[in-house]
Structure formats: C-alpha cells, structure tokens
Amino acid sequence: MDMPTVAIVGRPNVGKSTLFNRLVGKKLALVDDRPGVTRDRREGDVNFGGLVFRIIDTAGLEEADPGSLIGRMRAQTEAAILEADVVLFVIDARAGILPADQPFADMVRRAGCPVILIANKAEGGAGMAGAYESFSLGLGDPIPFSAEHGEGIGELHDALIENLPKRDDDEEYDDDPQNRSLKVAIVGRPNAGKSTLINRMLGEDRLLVGPEAGITRDSISLDWEWRGRRIKLHDTAGMRRKARIDDKLEKLAVSDGLRAVRFAEVVVVLLDATIPFEKQDLTIVDLIESEGRSLVIGLNKWDLVADQNGLLKKLREDCTRLLPQVRGVAVVPLSGLAGEGIDKLMQAVINAEETWSTRVSTSRINDWLSEALQRNPPPAVSGRRIKIRYATQVKSRPPHFALFGNQLDGLPKSYTRYLVNGLREAFTLPGTPIRLSLRTSK
Ligand code: GDP
Ligand code: GDP
Image (tube, rainbow, N blue to C red; front, top):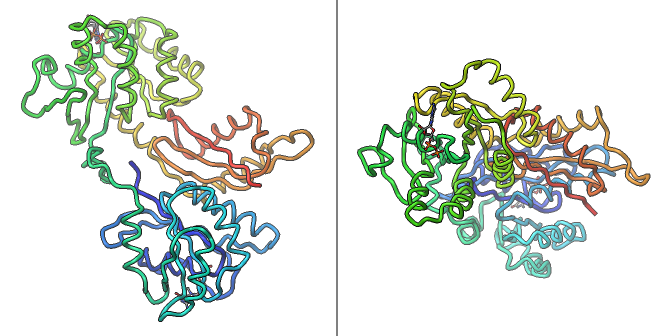
C-alpha cells in the first residue's frame, strides 16, 4: 500500500501554499500576494502529529498566458484530486464564496472522495460570515482556520484522522523495503520445476517437512530471506499437495494460479527451457499484466540445454515478440535442480519490484510529454485536433499515468502505445505493466 495522499485544492490566493508550508514544515513553496505568480506543483512528505502522508499543493501553474491559466490549473487540480485519498478544500473566509470557487468545488464534489473544508484567513474569529457561507458549497462543515497563524490545526488533525485510510496492519507495510516482506509467487505449467525450485530456495526438503528454524509457514506463504531481504514465497506446492489429497487437481490449479498472482508483488513465470513457449504461458503473462503485478521469466532446467547461448538469444527474442505488453522483462536461465542461477533470479525479482514501484515527478513527465508530442503529434479525429495538455503519475505498483486534454477518447490505440512505449523508455520501466488513463476535460 502506498503512503496516503492529501491534495490541497482551491482557487488562487486562498492560502493553499501557506497551508502547504505549515504542514510540510519547510518554507518550500513561494508565497506571494499577487495572484498569478509562476509556481510549479509541489509535493511533500508530511508527518503531522504522527499522521504520515504525502501532500500535493495545486497552487501555481498560473502562466504568463492568462488564456491557458484556468485550463491548466483545472487539469492540475483534477490530477491531484484523482491521486488524493483526502482533499483539503480551501476558501478565503474573509472574501466569502466567489464565483471562482465554484468550478473547483464542482470538481471535488464529482470526485466523491472525502473532503475537509477549510475556511482560511479566519484568525481571531475573522471571516465568520464567509465560513458560514461556505456551507452552501455542499462540502460539509467548514473548519475556521488560519494557515498563517496556525489556528484550527487541532481540528484539521482530528478531521484527517477520521478521513485518512486506515493502515491495514496485516499488510505489514513499511516504507523501508528492508523491513518489509516482498511477496513472490512462482507460477508455471505442471512439471516446469516449481516445487524443486522452491525446495532449493528454502533448503532441501524443508518445504515437505513443514516448520523449521528460520521458516514459518501458514496456509499460503513461506517466509524466507535472501541476502537480508525478507521474502514471502507463495506456497504453490502446498496447494498442490492439498489438491492431490482432494483429487481436484485441475480445478485447483486454475484458481491457484490466479490466487498466486493476486498474492504476489512479483510473479516468476517458470518455463521449462526444453519446451517451447505455449499458449498457456502467454495466458499467464496476460493474467499477470491485467492484475498489474511485476514479473520475471525464469528459464528452468538450463542444465539440460546444449546450445545455451543460441537458445537464450532465441527465447529473449520470443519474449520481445510475444510479450509486448511487458517489453524488456527480465529473462533468467537457471536450474532449480542444480541450484544454479537462483541468485540472478532473485536479483531480477528485486529489480522488478523496484521498477514496479517507480515514481516519476510531474515535471519530468511533462518535459518528456512535450518532446513526445512534438516528435509525433496526435492525429486529428474527424477534422478536430486532439489536444494533450498535461500528464502525471497517479499511482505506482504498477506505474499508472494519466493524460489530460481534449478529445482523448478519439486517440487511436497506436498512439497510446506510442506514449506507453515512450514512458517505458524515458523512465526506465522495463518489464512492468504500465497503466495509462485518459481524462478529457469539458
Ligand atoms: P494560494 O494561491 O492559494 O497558494 O495562496 P497563498 O498561500 O499564496 O496565499 C495568498 C495570500 O494570502 C498571501 O498573501 C498569504 O500571506 C495570505 N494568507 C494565507 N493564509 C492566510 C491566513 O491564514 N490569514 C491571512 N490573513 N492571510 C493569509
Ligand atoms: P512442478 O510441477 O512445476 O512443481 O515441477 P517439479 O518441481 O515437481 O519438477 C518436475 C520434474 O522436473 C521433476 O522430475 C524434477 O526433478 C525436474 N526438474 C525440476 N527442475 C529441474 C532442473 O532445473 N533441471 C532438470 N534437469 N530437471 C528439473
């Protein structure tokens, strides 16, 4: 689970940056009396009295060209709302509700995520009329607040506790990867060598005899350590043993594949290198892609391969051709039986998880975007130019980007593929599923 995200939203000059500075605790954002100062989007990590979250300030982006100002501001606000678990909607209580507040309030209401309404500039009881007026926005009770003087901070803290998503302790989420178990599943056709590999990883026969020092097991996973990294391995073999007993092997094998993929952060697709790619292998990769997991391909029984260089070259080409949706996926030869190549496999697994978790800053994405649009502009659809204005990464694990603009529904598949390939290349995202959402603004 990612760190929860909070977005500060509102029209220019209500005090968003001042609030951002107060929460982040550093004078990061530039504050200026004049509306329209050029600022870029800011993000910061916040520890607010034990509440840990990422915060996005949507102030700024007011450009020299006032014509494009509202559009870009709106696109940026929409992007931030899309990412947010909670929105802090800020109004200027002294100014009251202005027409300029409405479009931002509409966006927040449409998004349907929790909103905390902040009536700012209300220090010393000022602007109470404006605070009352803000009820009319339909965003709930306002908190009379002063970003400049720190009034209302306690109420804001309470409101955040109420609205931020609760951490699921079972997830064992920890921001430090060293403290967190990486969930790995090994899937593949029967006889690819999954059990042999898992046994080899954990130490011979332990899988079959159950709990031992250093290994605890529950119904679906086995705790393991590789070079100091904690790993939870999906217990494929355990499922199979149960299946044999119940004599429902076929049925269980299918649902177990899905269960294994859903369990895992990284899925190892284990192939028997002596048998060519089959449709079943492609199906499982499709499943991993559609479930949004990262993956590595293991070429097992490498000890049986005579022409190792030739076969590796051929299988890597096969992967490029047959698996374009995970272009650049790591392909690692190994032998579970001989215990060879396991370190390389595990290193690839760790790398895949890192790639899958990548976060790219909005400014880098937009630098890339303007170049990509220049090199290959989007086509016109029924005479009308498709306009792409802005892009941002809305989530990771897997990397998920959103494009904002006009007529995006008309973008041909080939063009979105061009963009996805470009993102993959520009931000070094080999082998991971990549999501791209299109957001057309009205
Ligand atoms: P933004 O455009 O929404 O990011 O607004 P800023 O944070 O740049 O603030 C706009 C103006 O309002 C600046 O002059 C701030 O000093 C002022 N301001 C911000 N918060 C408060 C507050 O709590 N009380 C008062 N009186 N002024 C504030
Ligand atoms: P699973 O059905 O995927 O769990 O496959 P198993 O682990 O049960 O292995 C199937 C067969 O392949 C067994 O006879 C294993 O001994 C053999 N096998 C597994 N890994 C290797 C390997 O790396 N090299 C060779 N030569 N045989 C292997």
